[in-house]
Image 1: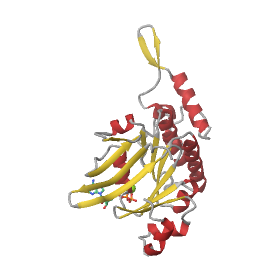
Image 2 (image 1 turned 135 degrees about the vertical axis):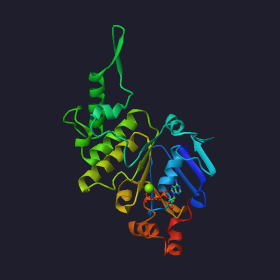
Image 3 (image 1 turned 180 degrees about the vertical axis):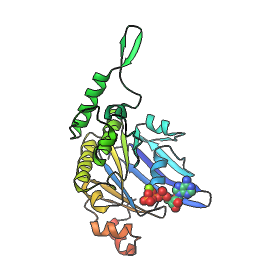
Image 4 (image 1 turned 90 degrees about the horizontal axis):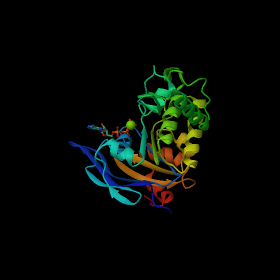
Length: 259
Ligand SMILES: Nc1ncnc2c1ncn2[C@@H]1O[C@H](COP(=O)(O)OP(=O)(O)OP(=O)(O)O)[C@@H](O)[C@H]1O
Ligand SMILES: [Mg+2]
């Protein structure tokens, strides 16, 4: 097996008296889609915020390409190739797809003593990157606010891929989408994975996770209930685990104690 792109070991996160994470471990390999499932308040967002440098863990270690590291800020995580697409997406609805894609990193061209944004190149790259993800933009000047939810997710994903993400973290990218939009986003995740990028896909929805996941980790009240590989667990078992694991003892056998 290859070295994981990123590995988190026994992560604990306390907020005062609240223990949001009580020892969670997860790794992501190149080209793997690792799904993180769990009910509301399970600790999913806290965990990926630890992975992306928003929070520093109270305890536990983070390894990037096998070497122990710590992220002092989101900048550190981004520099290490960890890109996160949050649910609110951090996009500006009134601005064009191109401006949202580049977000201040636009290519420049020099005319005499002046630097100008090279809109020709910026637009072309944006159109190309979106086309690679299966979305044909009518025109790159279209405001992001006029895109569908799925298309907006795709802009954020294409942007992360273009800027060199090694690990892409998606926090509930399909939760607000209809059936067709969802299958588009799932297809996009599959394309990203095939580029060798590791994906962490957070979801409430077992069917969405099952459609693209290679491994599944279930969180419950800040703890890992287990990690299962594709084919080792049925959707019903996964659903049951998420619901709180009443039949946990029964399921332990099928999970094989793998964490
Ligand atoms: N900044 C914070 N301060 C105090 N408690 C927090 C903070 N962030 C999260 N928590 C608590 O940690 C627990 C886990 O929250 P988290 O947002 O990680 O859950 P989640 O699995 O992402 O839930 P959801 O599915 O609703 O998004 C919750 O009990 C929450 O109230
Ligand atoms: Mg959350």
